Every structure is written in structure tokens, then in C-alpha cells.
Length: 129
Image 1 (spheres, rainbow, N blue to C red):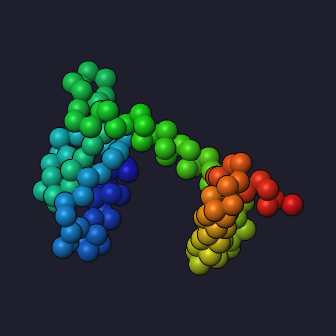
Image 2: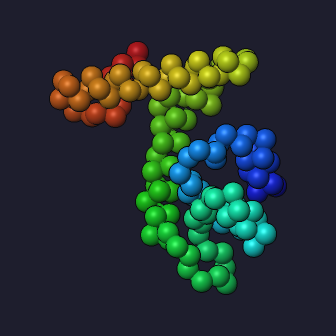
């Protein structure tokens, strides 16, 4: 399903790929299939994904573990520290505003903690009252 949605997005929004360097798509194991990968290649998209069982190791395999750790860390920050699972937005615009407010607050806190040599740079704990 996700594969078809991705191809549909590229079809509906051709500007995502037009006039840019060919993108590299980092995906999970479910983004597989010769036909799917050929469609991406025809669009100029380079696919990097982990090998599925029985497949030989694929290009970019060394990127997946550190990238996964980074993604999980960002997700945990968004869900835990910034409480984005309970954002309170009732419309797409409301959700967008609440997400951006929290990201801006975290960015400001990181900048402030860095400039004042705070003991923990990436934390809002000191400001959570």
C-alpha cells in the first residue's frame, strides 16, 4: 500500500522531482519489488532500503543502523518532550501551528542552553513548570 501511495504522490505532485538533483529515498524493507523499484528509477529516485530475507546485502546498508537511531531519537523527542501525541489541534492548520510552536520552543531552549553553557543542551526540563 505505501509503495502505491508514494508513486501516487510523485504522480500528483511532479514538482517534487522536477528541476532538482535526483533524490535518494531511505526506506524500510517494505519498499521492495522489481516493478516498484523500476518505477522509482524511471522517475530518477534512488532507493536505499535494507535487504529482505534471502536478498544479498544492498547498497547503503551501513547507513541504516545510525539513521534508525537518529529517527527513533527524533520521534521520542517529538512524542515525549514535546508531547506531540496530544497536540490539541482540531484542524490541519491548528496541528501545524502547535507542532511548529513546540519545535521553535525546543530550538530556542537548545540555543539558550548552548549559549549559557547549560548542563543539558537538548532539554526543556528546566522550563517545564
